[in-house]
Length: 113
Image (cartoon, rainbow, N blue to C red; front, side, top):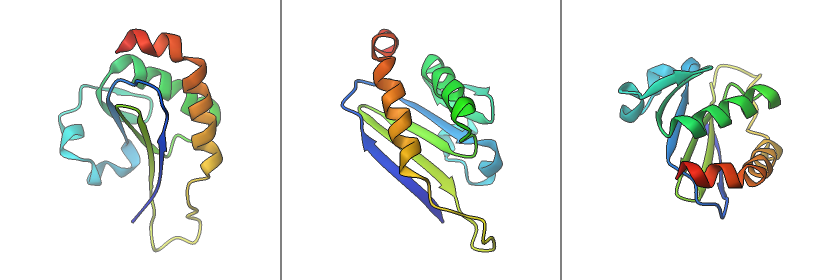
């Protein structure tokens, strides 16, 4: 089971999937043949955007999430364990903070595409 937040960013984003190493057993096929590894994530897709997202994740302390961008969509996901009472859904404020960061970096990101 996963907690998921999806946002239409209204930005033209390069595609990247960043899968958290803590959930590697459930990684999608795309990640099993990853383009690289950064921080706590294996990633497939745009390395520059993966680096930007990783830097933001470290700053905002949400390194337990997996992230994906596709066209103008941002998806955040977090594995949930039915065995743990400590699991909480993703705080939507994290997604809003990340969206604001992406908008602030819009000029840099547009050079990635």
